[in-house]
Length: 259
Image 1 (tube, helix red, strand yellow):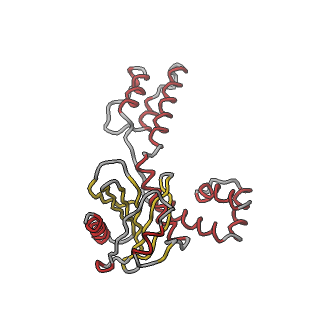
Image 2: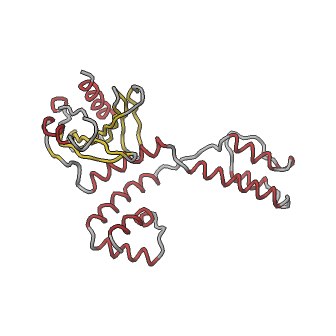
Image 3: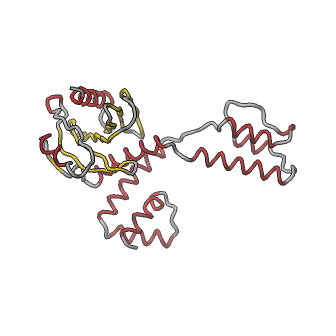
């Protein structure tokens, strides 16, 4: 197994979905590849965090109505606030015509597919978290390591088609430690790295065509995030720092950028 194939199969290996032959080949490759071992460790962390939270969804009303309409009147489930798959299973009369049963099962399958597809925003959140974790695991926080904003900012020249704002927040307790080029949502972005005591903070910046949006805080898989849009730029910051400290960091960035 070569390096490229190992990276392609890594998600399935982490989720224990490979066959015995591929699993053994992957383990032999990991024994001799430091890069893949680091990537495996990063993906394991992300996978374990995902497993700690299970999301439950209500079925879309229009699909539930279509399934209900396909059932004979006597077998239709009573209205409920949550569409329950077990209740649907019990409501199906297995002596009903095969065509009706096939319709019901096909609609049920379409609900599962609909609910399993994450939104574009959810995918971006996961990408940001994965990038943050990966930067810590592979010991590659920065491509340019410097506390001088006048060294970090020009480093991006020629690497991006925009100039990310780089500010010094050492006096506020968030010293700049470097920057790197990263990729989110299929496009290159600037990643600026700050630190609060022993907690690295990744600040991702890229152009936006949307309107200005006030800061929004969220906690995702144990990490805190603050995101906002200002003057044609999207800002996302993530860290395991305490929520209030990360909020203070975001406010400091916004204040300096708006000057």
